[in-house]
Image 1 (tube, one colour):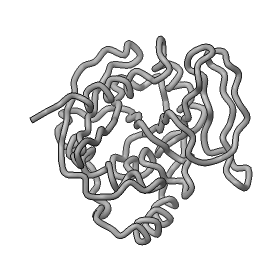
Image 2: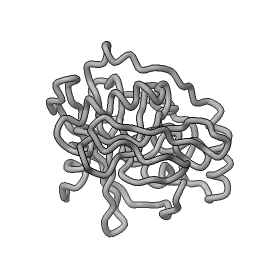
Image 3: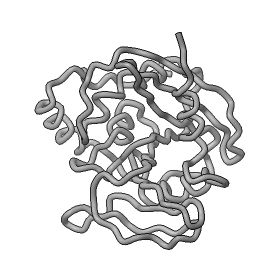
Length: 222
């Protein structure tokens, strides 16, 4: 699969922040047409001994049957800095993207989309490279304020930034279990992102595309 190579990744942190602020203006929010989605990809990265291993697993939708998986490994070249995760993980993810034989209809990232201090988490940032709808589904809170959602499956509350603008949702995907933090990346919106994540979470807290990618990324490869 091809993608747009918008910039290099080996930037000093201050330049990376300035780039995020410029790219944020290019993000487009719009409803995902879930009725037309047939292939959905989960994306995750594991890091061990300064080596990053990424995996993209493609599943059928809405059946959530695993169809294929690709992996890539490389040296981890960017430090861990909250808010700059894309500069650490994107290069190895894009190596995986090159291996995809068919473009999925939606990518779901283990990370943030708009619910980010500068409005451009890894799902948003790489959405600009991919030109395909992207959604962030994170296990923990990074940015924004919210009220606790209802503890029943399907409960959610809106995440807002400092001026009150909605930037994502806290979503209960399994009854009486801590929620996930969902935010649109690029070419998606809050409502359709929440619907997609709930549809992708029939049994477990973590949506199936992300669970599958996490398993694949954690596998040891020589």
